[in-house]
Length: 316
Ligand SMILES: Cc1cc2nc3c(=O)[nH]c(=O)nc-3n(C[C@H](O)[C@H](O)[C@H](O)COP(=O)(O)OP(=O)(O)OC[C@H]3O[C@@H](n4cnc5c(N)ncnc54)[C@H](O)[C@@H]3O)c2cc1C
Image (cartoon, rainbow, N blue to C red):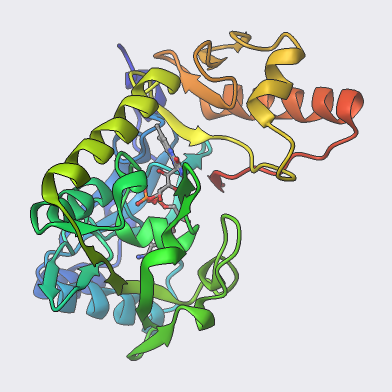
């Protein structure tokens, strides 16, 4: 597949525009820096414009000091986990993006598992299984990072991230402190972190339960099978596009009933496998996806008098 046109050939920011003293400070923190970085290589949707500066810290201290430095200098930034829930617009972005991908440590003691934010969720589930710990069986196959799952209280097959969280370490730009599950204000596909953008998830303590390793593995594989049978995992996407507006309203079924399954705009298509997903057939622009979203919303409103809200995070 050719995704190259999404990244635009010309680079939008002059290398001289980047504050040299900031770059040196970030190098001192052990970060890897990428200027004019295409977001399309960092998001699962494989589309979107470039960002002026993309920072990959290589240690937890480096990560926290990066955020401190950006705050001190009033530089706008966003956090990216594994980019599986982000739809970035096609235009270039002057803000900085900081990745948690190398902040990936899991520690296990006495039934509690501590995971830093950048750990891939699948890896977290596999470590739990290897240690004979039950609780993550229905979560297996959830793409993305632990931080991303906490941010949006990701859920599947009747399970939600919040169920297993005891407490969360949070960074407010100056210090790290711990908040309880209750304080994180978890609800359907949301948490405190969606409202308080200045709070960054550093890591979390999970409660898991002793179980039988082979039984856990079997249940995990069952969950994964359900995913690849029902979801278009072979195509780039950001998962289900819309939140379920109420428990008895199935968005995918509604979209299918409107004859939109398989409908395309440009390179974006309502998945033939699961109408709740919009996929990138290889050359989609974010604008194609936005148009499809608007079309679905308006048809669903007309027919069902229901206002759909997006579950995916749109980065303008
Ligand atoms: C094929 C597919 C299937 C999916 N299935 C499901 C599913 O079953 N259930 C479900 O709920 N979701 C699903 N998703 C959506 C997505 O995988 C989850 O929302 C996932 O938890 C996002 O994690 P991430 O690391 O990729 O977050 P990202 O996409 O990187 O970021 C999402 C948001 O979280 C914020 N964020 C990330 N890390 C932090 C942090 N440490 N501190 C503060 N903010 C942070 C980002 O700023 C951004 O706003 C699916 C996606 C795909 C592509």
